[in-house]
Image (cartoon, rainbow, N blue to C red; front, top):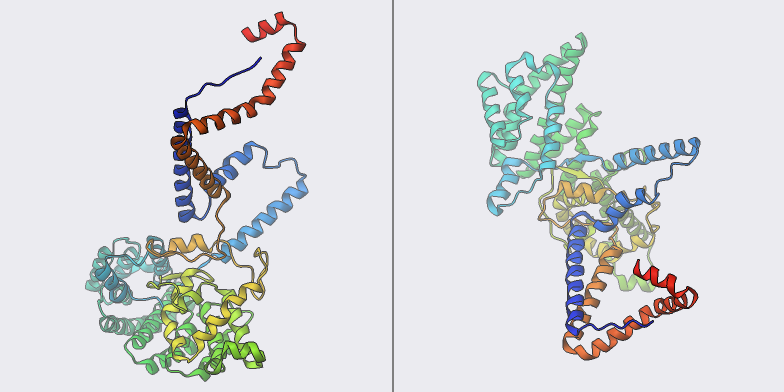
Length: 505
């Protein structure tokens, strides 16, 4: 029994053209989804929905193994949460005097809603307490910190000041209404007088009960915040030595308040003064194994070691005679810094454009790299040959890190959650730096190949219909040859009457 296929060539053109169009649309969607979310849509759907249906989840394991796996999942989830902890940027800019001016000039919003929402939560934590309802101005400010509309916050701050002097109201106006650093500094100085008075008063009453203790803790946070921002105003206005003194006094007066990371402000100011001996002293105190690292700590340590050799460093000479001990120490320090945050070198070497830093950063992420480079690029440029040494050596770091990144070399393995968190922290117009560079998913490659192949078939069929028709018939005949062979064998074995009844069915 032979089957013949009589199909016109235009059918092949329509078939291959339609296949090419559909696969092209799938390719475009997959590529857009991958660029936006960093994963393949088809793979995500397969893992999320099809895998459970196909028995991908094993429920037959013993209780002991299930409990151990659940404990492992809990540990990994706790680790991912700690890895993706978002920190307040210790060098964050002023909204009114800096961020808003950028918006007025460019028409772009430098801060994301997620970033500003985190700042609102910080302000509520630092500047409010449970007894705020006892004072009308503090009650108004408690609501003001929750307001999403900037103008509503500013209006509330003015209402609080109409009732009485309020340090947090001055803080809000300095941060958001002042259009210059000079105006902001003036408002912070007014806040400082009120804040010091409240701090002294609550310090005397802090042991009289939990309510007074909470008030003292709030007043301490307010005072530290004001003094730190005043020091930053001095730094921005060129009074760097005054800023250094204020930061040192603040760190001596409140040594336990490490959440503000004032030492990073101090390091940047000391580098501006080119006081490298004091920079080394600060690093010796904070670059400790028991303390959390940061890009500022790691890259400043690398800069100091590079400074000792960078002015005379030559890659050609080093390849001939080998690295000296000092050069080896500098290269190792650069490798250590790059392993901690691999995004920084491209910004320091100006291979990637900078944007304004966000108010919050993710350590080891692109947001931290932007915040560090925004303030420290000038210090690297000031050290002769430092950027050249970085350019020659930074990529060598990746040869020492195990791949895939199951474990780190000098630090914990690079967290997998940085890309997602950085996309929330950084504005849409910025192309987020991703490490390690993700390979294209299989389905993007597959749809690209399918689209190209079917498009080529459609073009050939349109240009050479007779020849492609012959090829198509030959291909289909070859494809259905096993089926024809099986059908003939079945016809020879089964009785003709039974075969006739089956074919009728």
